[in-house]
Length: 310
Figure (cartoon, rainbow, N blue to C red):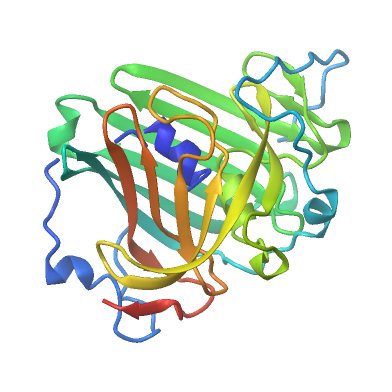
């Protein structure tokens, strides 16, 4: 599950008793651009005087430097408070797709340390059948400045197969530090957490890039700074398990984990409209492949004009 969140929270969960793909399931998408009916979805500390340098991050390209113009000029034009997204996670093993769990994202407008922020919550869980083998209940939170799209605080509460961990990170922008449960670490000016990176990336203007371009960014995860990027692959019309979409296709550089391979192994398709929401994510894993499809949305900032048909 954590692996999926590193993807969905690039997005876009190592998640089975899933509901079949019935017409009721597909009705999460309207036949017009109107939104679907409502359903129930699931203080900055002062920096210490001494700052520990971040440990060396494995599996990153030290030659990649974030685009400072991209960082300083980023403004939110893609999402709004009240947005809700739900994804289903599938394992593909020996040609069979097994629905293992789901992930959801909600966005609200709040105050953090007297500043306007987007409070983004991402939650992932396995289905009841999968719980018998590997139960997952994960919750991620990020408090993101509405003007700069930089995070102030990141919270991770992980319960995966009996392994539990909690992480609380406060980003002190004036000192370029990240205060964690275990210490204080130096971070670059333009830094993202694993959840804020998704919403940050949704605001990329791909019309300014050509196929093959790398769009770099820095991410703080597990007390390390990773120099990552998104490689733009062009546009493609695809059919997910729920609908057909016109999409923008790219591959993020991944941090190698217990399930996902490092490098550019994962492919992400986001809607080719101003919302830029992920509708499909695919990646090989140690046994087979994981596939993630969007199954529900609500309160998008713009009509879902990339939807071709159901």
